[in-house]
Length: 75
Image 1: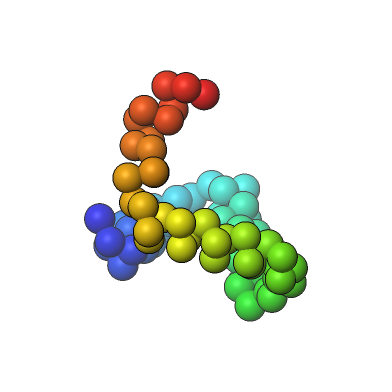
Image 2: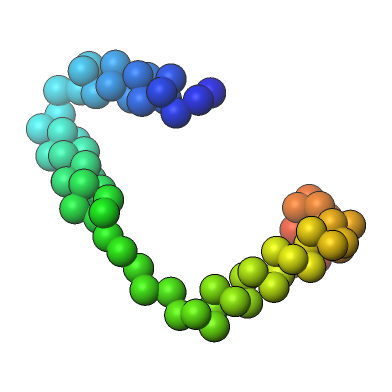
C-alpha cells in the first residue's frame, strides 16, 4: 500500500472517531510532526564519511550483506 492510500485510509478512520481524548492525541501527534518536519540535524563529518565508506564497500561487494531473516536468527 502506498503512502497516499495509507493517508486516505487514516483520514477515513479519523472521520469515524468520536472520542475527544483520541482526537486530542491525534492532533498532538500531528502538531509534533509539523513542528519537527523541517528540523535540521547536525551530523558530524566523521559519521558521514563512515556511512559513505560502508556504502562503497557494499557497492564493491554486495554479497557481504546479510539477509534480514538470517541476521535476525543470530541476534
